[in-house]
Image 1 (cartoon, rainbow, N blue to C red):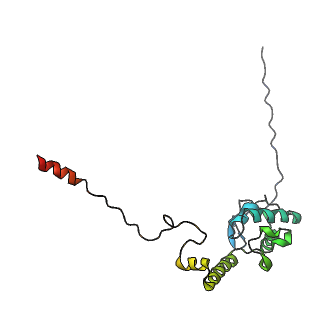
Image 2 (image 1 turned 135 degrees about the horizontal axis):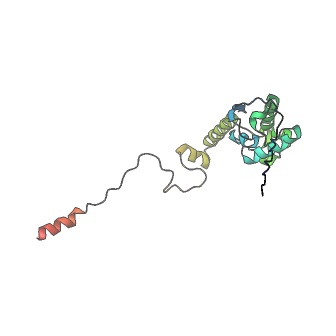
Image 3 (image 1 turned 45 degrees about the vertical axis):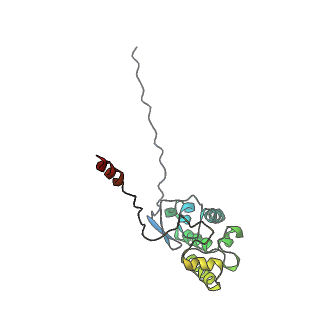
Length: 175
């Protein structure tokens, strides 16, 4: 009845070591991005690049061998430069015009260019003295929201309740 339990040898899967330079933070389109996130999510950190544009640019970059699921730290400098060019000119990688945030010649703007463009648009509305321009000048809501209870600025003034002592004083006087 002596049974010997044979211990099975566990084989370890040995992966070939590939030397990849790990970068903690990568500068992508003028924004510092953590290297441990996928490219698809890292592009959304750039102002002016949302979910749809990020997905469209990443699918367009697949032709050039850059995967949207690849970590940003694993991209070479040439690939990072290619991504920046694709974000600056999305039509070059086959992104449709309805995904862009500007129409016409400008294409898609991001970062400080977008910020400056929005400021110029607001200044133009104010100069034309359109309804939207007036609302901007007055500091009110522009897109039709109600303003009765929200969007208030300044210090709040508390509401003081009437003192409850008056009925109590009458009871003491009756005694």
